[in-house]
Image 1 (tube, protein in one colour):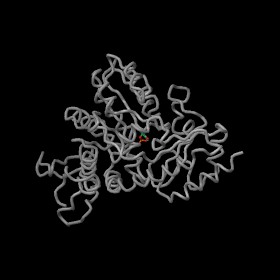
Image 2: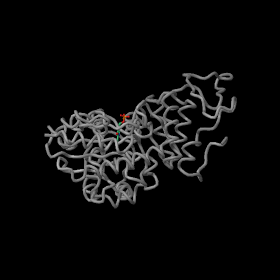
Image 3: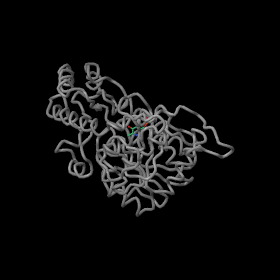
Image 4: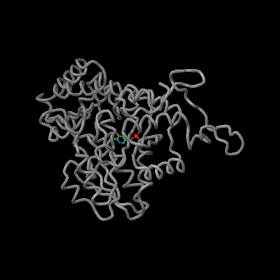
Length: 388
Ligand SMILES: *Cc1c(COP(=O)(O)O)cnc(C)c1O
């Protein structure tokens, strides 16, 4: 297709075509990677297609940004060098000294750290509340709250928060509502359509999908917020490289099929763990006894690829289990084609040890990949069988 926006098309058609027209010079079906820092001007200020310098704009980054805006139902998207750089741009675009941020109490540890250890030095205040409990969130909002920050499903306990309900509470209190959509991806859940003002992603995870890049993104349908975030991106400069932007665009084209399989495999893995004598709890929104199963079924198109479990043998059993898995490799991060196991309390969540965000020490988090489900289930069963 040679036209680059198709609002009426379905998710995968837009993922494959929006922002991704063939190269007009050669007809190459895939847009080239624009590995350039600067652009020749036809006389001073004579920019070709608006391009001047790649911190301010690059065609490979623009292609990704158009694709992301389309998939999240936003009007503007910005691609950054990491998820945290994307978060930082939102925070700086919105907050002034004295402002307060209310966050879910099980957001990504680095998100909490960014505000509590960096933005706090400029007088920004932070507190947390259980985002799956609307009354707790209402009680946590202050007159100075400017951002209500929600992550759903949450990491690593897979709690599900009601985005529409939170958007209503946040807006009534005069705050903007930011949704970290990294775990769900735009294929499973579109927070802007549920009332959130801004969506943020670590594109390192499902959107990149192959564990070969680090990146982040912000998407919004609010033009004035977009202008402020775009200015932050230009003035601070934490942009995605053209190569990473191109890789991320390539990955987005297969997001729907990948996430469908992640969901199928995760459901099978979660069900295989339920009732095992060494396992005391399995956290997965697709299980009928998950506390927010109904909400998840309403708010999401599927239940995602992340599962966590708690072990009867406590921390020792968690540390032992990760020595016995073979297909599930021990590593931080998530959302790639390969299955990973992580011990959050000393890995992804080490930065929040001893705070209200600390996670249980008997807990392991699984990023269920795209290998054959039988191999994934067998790998965990043999490893559980080795626990004393
Ligand atoms: C990884 C992650 C981040 C941070 O993103 P980086 O790309 O590592 O900077 C933020 N939120 C969630 C939910 C994440 O999983």
